[in-house]
Image (cartoon, rainbow, N blue to C red):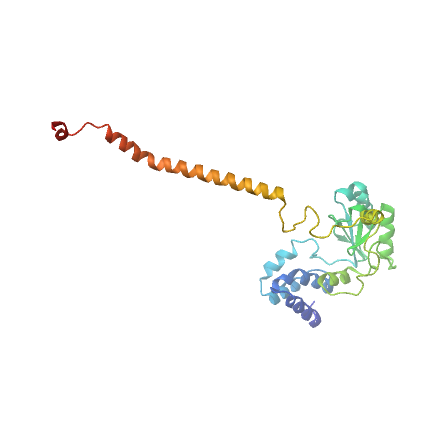
Length: 277
């Protein structure tokens, strides 16, 4: 498959967004995935050519990060967090149930091409554990039963809305957004809820606000208090005393040989001429 002229133009556009073009490699690989369904060999070669780096350098990045796929993906990417908190809250059970229900292993795609299942690391949503993602949109507080219902809806082509986020489209469309091309749905659906807002709600109920910059005792104000000044003065005097003591010691060491020679000379017997006198 050959990349389209539109895709080539967008890849060059991404490279032009950065002071150093090679910084665009990560979003460029996401864009390749959005059109090809994975990071293809051609995509690697094209990225290398645009950025004037070697294909080996691009391949090294594409094989290092797990979000880049070297095999064709399904329409939807379903990720089950199996990191510590999600795991103990039921993430491991959810993952095992989905593997059996979909008849796939980790990072494998269903026969109908609709779902690629993967166990993933922490998604920074521990307050909603266990969490499942679909095309990187959150589905909170899941159970094995709710997760099975979710993937069945996806496979049936039903409209599915994330717990916190937009309506689910497809993995390829999500990859295009990650690449840096907005789809106009950034504000669709809530972005925070429940436990994530607990601290905010408590502060609001009690009238608590963050201190203004410079008024907090721990904030830098540019002015030292008396204790700071006293401490600085003590440290300065101690340093001066240490320097004086060190200088005196060094002087004593340097003068010691000469002094010894002088004392030795004064103890030598007088010359014959002097004694004759």
